[in-house]
Image (cartoon, rainbow, N blue to C red; front, side):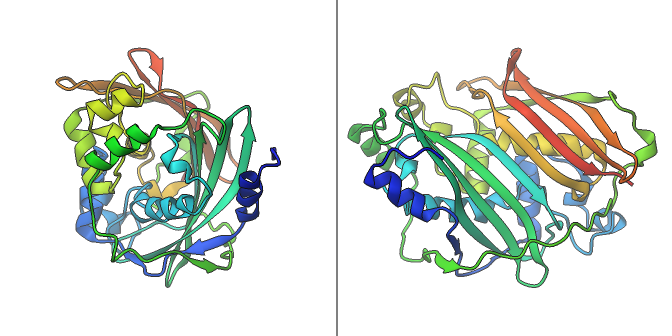
Length: 339
């Protein structure tokens, strides 16, 4: 960790490791699972058909891997608002995302989000924040861990202007804040021992190292971006406002990072057979997916089996995505428990 010695840096450093939690729980609805799967273009029947989900070993409808963003992202935003200078108002960009999956999320689960600032670096006028989120079910315990890394201009860098912030205020959804419950201090949750289950995953013996997974081409339109804004509750106007995108020095509006990554997870789970077989998923965001006003951005997803571990029947998948030959993700991996 790099410390500049400023009061702001010292104040941020004192926050590292302090855990806060949501006061109320988020109940995962069956229809919300289907809405979220639809937003991610994910047709895996375990998200749509309760009988198919039961066949894979789940007692209720299974949620897509990244559905925890619905509540976890809001809790994380509240955490970053507590940081001196509120980096969310400085023009931060998401640069990395990592998940560890302990138990699958299904309809009816009652989730709470524990958030903390995991690390902070400040160098050459730039800030790098990593927030950690632990998702807990009231009855099942820890379900997921995730780490989100954001990069911003820092205290001495070129942040967003007052004029830009006023533009944002005039474009963003204007909800009442009276019902928003503040985060409360909490103790760090105990992370469970690994108890892998393959659920409905394909057989380990059917795979070989170097095996390529059939590619998938996915179109993203402005309608897809706006739909994801509504389903996931992502308020960032650079995903729907040309004026704000231009003011942020972007070519045009951009697809949400978690939309493209969530769709990648669905692409991989179609091959694996059951999303609940995933143990880890991580990606580094290399470049934005620009979506023009009247035509779709076309993303091509590719993947292959990099390494197989016979002693555990696990496999490491590497995957990527490109738009017109330009890489969208970098250093992307998924660890899967095969049957």
